[in-house]
Length: 363
Image 1 (cartoon, rainbow, N blue to C red):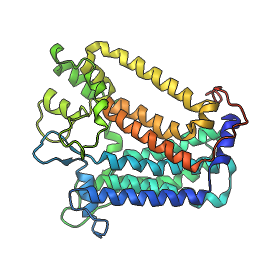
Image 2 (image 1 turned 90 degrees about the horizontal axis):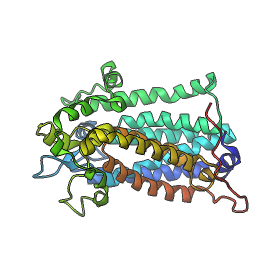
Image 3 (image 1 turned 180 degrees about the vertical axis):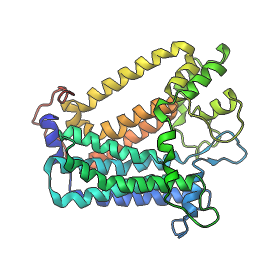
Image 4 (image 1 turned 30 degrees about the vertical axis):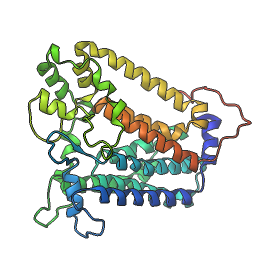
């Protein structure tokens, strides 16, 4: 499963310890910049967890004199994709070459991913770690046997612990100075959150949106200007639709917003004709999968990294959030991932011809 290109790809990945060192250094640099850019006075030198509680509880910092949107520091946070690239490369290299002395490097890269999720207060990134591992196992042709499951449990425990800490900090526990970092109550979002199967917002939109209010495809073009950093264009119009849904459609006046989801955004633009968007996205996802997981895609397009880190994020983002906001982030992350792979992966052997033959077949 994966063919010669997939096996050769593992040989082209550079020294594991070099990858871990690069990942740790760049992650530390991004974290310092993120803390310095934050307006809440958060400091890496603060021994109290109050700093992290402030970031987790306030995911978006309000822009002065504006009540409808804020600054999410997306330009800095997009570089947190770096630990994901390092983790996928190291895990796949280990699965193909099987050297036990590289296990500490894999665990180290996993810790980097958990750290970046904690710093940003993003619980969804913890789920992404398991998705990366499952995709790497599938591409390497490994089966989910007892040994693999037991190894996975070593990561599940810190993942669940981090999830609990982020949840407690986000919900404001510890404001009195006493922090309850681990609690069973913090795991409720796993059951109560609907995320990708959320039909509540689209149903509300079909009720509140009127024929004259349809956007006519306009929201799918916001990405044209959305890539400009707000630091360079403070008056930049909002890109995401969350605040529009919350403030203008539902009439709730407060900072933040409700993600319209992919289905909701399609309806907001075209009404019931928005069903066509589903077919367009499905076609895009399938063609992208073939593009990255073909033999040539793995050999020259870094498909083993692009597929789990970029394409799977696209599937999640386009289903859950607004199109333009996700598109801008993914385009920027694709550039970062491409440059990083170019630096960390040795060039393919140009003498060996590659074809577009897809890798294996799913049973």
